[in-house]
Length: 215
Length: 229
Image (cartoon, rainbow over all chains, first blue to last red; front, side, top):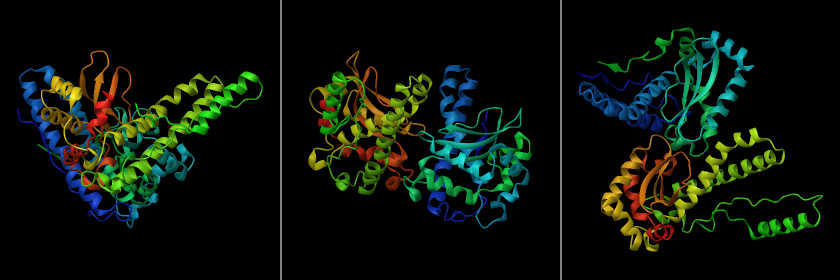
């Protein structure tokens, strides 16, 4: 049984396009090294899983789950992240590009500014590597803030709207230990148009909007 | 465990004793003075571990990261003290993850600085005596131990530490990994810890963390590790 092969999705902008919020050096390493490594390891995990499955080796299959969660999560989370960013000069970097979501966020958090403050606090509260997320509960439609550790994806029943990478590799070369400056600066380069599409669209449409999977 | 780890200043310790005496004498108006955790001095210069670990990394790691764990631990301890005095059990429980994280960060980094040394002060080389025997009993040889330790470091998913620990029940040594700043506590005694957080190597090695894991052995202070056994 041949397993699916995943490949690195190209960035929808240049490596230096997010400067000065995120440096070209960070973007280059983050995309060509870190994201690529998750994909390489994911493909290796899937090949091992296919072997274990065809051999009916359920113990070996279970032993692969941890690595699969980590590497598949790394691929999914980074893909969602790249898509949710855009150069600050774009009109899509303004909340006006997301009228429905902006209204819903103001209703939920009091104002857009209060939402952004809460999101910053969420990120700064992470203990170790992980992500901060704005998600929508797929049953109630409620907007919520959650964190996921390491490369865990958001839990089932939650649709990711925005994920911010808070691993040190996402900011350290530029911000060093001043992670608050990175967290606050990210709002200059958020692609509100994409956030609006995720908010308005179906759960399935959020993932792989710009590819990243090859059979 | 290090003498500097939970160091309180002499003045603070005197204050503690004085406070106790005062309370015994007149229980009416005493305020408990708790010793504060403080950032221990490095036993070598920031640049002393080069080229294994750059001076810039060491300076940021010690002055900024470790200091933040110390500050946040002291803040959490004060909050815990307030919750205890109000007998607010829920608040005390809610503080546990913060204390584990920042207290762990303080303990782990303190042990880490001490189990490193520049080569002119004995860094690198090989373990001797009982430690050598213990490692060979568990892992066959030093080189096989290092290979397994580096694999454990590379396998950490996210932030964390790898440790050589002693199981105080069996007396055997073994490699264990810990997430984030979880400290080595319980039946395990920490002997040698290597920080695998990205801030420990990223400015110098970026994503090539395997190079950091192999270089760090050049500055391991085996004498300190042996004393902890």
